[in-house]
Length: 246
Length: 364
Image 1 (cartoon, rainbow over the protein chains, first blue to last red):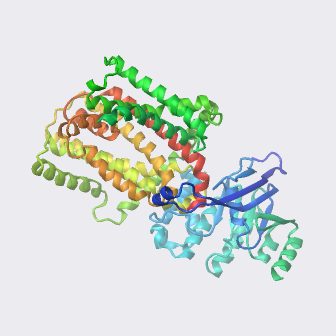
Image 2: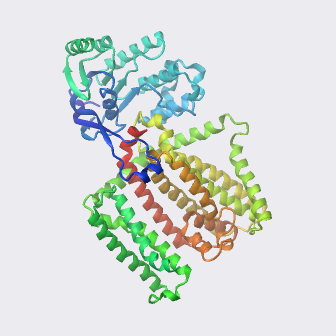
Image 3: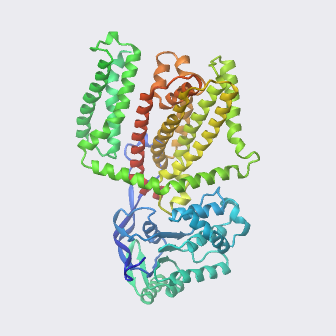
């Protein structure tokens, strides 16, 4: 599958992502006001970086600095307003907190549906089903509708799906602190196992300096949508620590 | 009625201009608006007058015109006003090119191919979840329309004396098809909001969500048509080869609902109270679609027959009844025509969604 080992896996070229602060309009309002004035909020400004295959990038920054937005646009949830993202044909999955499921369906159905959206065939997912269910520790809840799950169970299921259905590029958004202590350890171990694969490219967003120090090859520090620093974990994280402490 | 003499020439071009402006994302300058208004005025009236000339109406004499003629003139003009902006835009607007159109069509086909398996799987799962906790399981999909049918048969057949031959089946066909259409449209308005959880995590063309929902509704409709088949045997309806028309009719109904649904789905993201409006419009439409009675017989002429031709859902329901119950061939030219219009609507809807879906995730 890989002819050249030092292939680029992700190339992000000068991307900007804007949120138009366009609130829900009602029919009445749109009749009264002729033109709805839109404010534009720039969440990510002129960010560029390249990742080689197998590299692990940590992303750090304050709340609202555009980390999740960046990750989502790499995952293809929305395209950037300008600039380019080239994944060189790699499959990509985004692992993020919060619901990504259809509430009315059972955990099992949701595993299949999520897997299909990640580009797997139903057969491949069925083959790995037991592993996923076992890893998620959901037990009999797996056949109940997702709306009956606790928030911890939600996250466990989400983590298990992306951790077991392996894609070339994994985007990890703040999910390494999911569930109870035991699950946390287990997921961190699984994460390390996944990362150790030389063909897998990973971007991790986290607020935990120790985790990033341990896992990453490079760290990107985003501040107000712009790249503040990009480089060796030691140096960047030290700077960041000082910045946040001050 | 003198006003109509004026409006019959004006309404279609204005509608065409609206569609044209829509295709250009509302960025038409005032100067161009005036130019295109004139272009559409000339073209549309030339087409409509040409049509009526071919049908034997030579010359324009307002005093001789019947109301039917005027309404037909407006209806035909409006439908043409929907079609015409597409080629005109291709020819005149730099931003809209044949290559771009081809790209969109190609992308649409690829996406449909890629995501159909997902849509079907999701529809299956939805159907499964719907019955998982119900006592009577899938029987509900039959019980519900059957009960409605009994109710409407009593009210419209006995109380309002609007009975037709094979009245229970007549009603059943109406409510099955109308149910599919109205459920698809009212569902489309909040499709994006309902599936928020999924679409903030991963990309998919957003109309796939609607497509999947419509597969669910379509399956329920097919169950009702199973009941129709049983009722036809019980009521001893003599089947004719025309019942084969049922298939193209259902296909056109699906395409039309999908086309309208994609457009409604887009506006549903931004306009928060759209679901109220669709609710009102849909319940108004029930009566203009002849779900419970024959439009052409019960409505004052010429409106009844006109509505049966120019309201696509009414036309499809009436055709279905003709084909299944009364052994008459539906007007296939009109069926083909509405099929093409539906494809146009889908093109418009898919184009709208492709060019805006990026922003959906940010709004909800």
